[in-house]
Image (cartoon, rainbow, N blue to C red; front, side):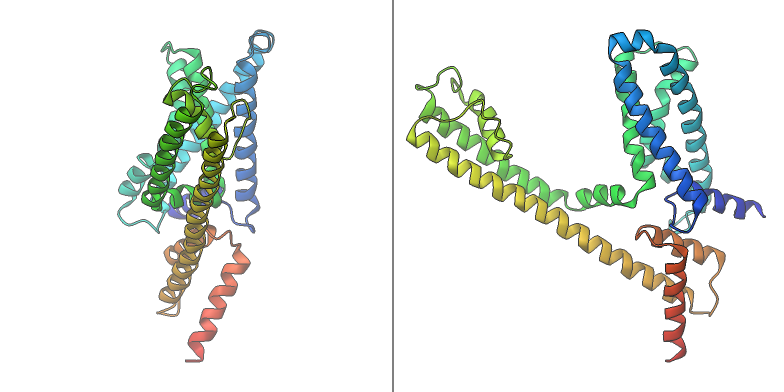
Length: 304
């Protein structure tokens, strides 16, 4: 195998695995389980009694995890040059990964351990918190997580507008309930900031029940606040779900277009196939499904 072919294969293994690639799927499963096991160890280590009793075990787990995650990060930097769906040279593709959100998460999740190895003294509590960021690495192994991040980024203006409405509703309902309940329940509604706790819990439909209105006017305000909360949450859910569906449709369109353009000369090159597989991975397609799409496009072209 050539150097480029080895690098391309390494990318297929560490990137989101297709259903037909047992090595890639096994790598995804192993690293996902390792991340979850790390989170369990970090959480248990924060318990003083367990930290003292099993400290050596937790240390061994962290060292082994640090070695594996550092190796994974190095491979991802190296193989980023094979991401043909990104424009630019191999060096620019690597730089784009390093400074991307996922690249920075990968780096930050191993940086505390590396600093400790070279002798830098760090607050153990902050080290544990930064190690918990490894949970975000799971987005590497499932397109669903990256899609959610992308949807939130794309709809940030709509979501911010909805949050603004939620803030306005919280402020006015807090002020109204302070006027209605302040004298009846001075310990719970002594000020508008005190009433904001009740308002936030009601608007988000949590409803702990530790604080509730007693006066008729207060109950009316509470009813309207609850209704506004339900509508606001439904609005945010609709924005995200609609954008998610549109994103999936766009991915399918991009895949179809890439296959059509790749077949213009009748032959799909290795680079073109890499782009097709990269797009298909976002739709969780296996090699058989990709081949079926290519065959279907060939049949369409032969009947024109």
